[in-house]
Length: 57
Image (cartoon, rainbow, N blue to C red; front, side, top):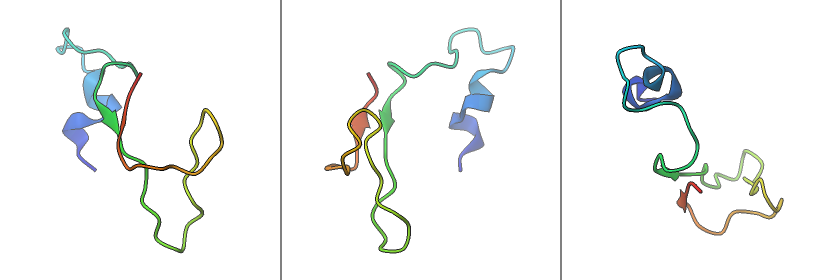
């Protein structure tokens, strides 16, 4: 995990430009199917993910 791109880093007091938020901060990438862990489901619908990259709305 990259500590310089996580939510903790965005909350640093000297970073006035970026604050923690969901929308407009890039893309989200769900975990791929590995056959061991349960399938990743979309939060909004509860259906399995269809692609591996989503824009954050």
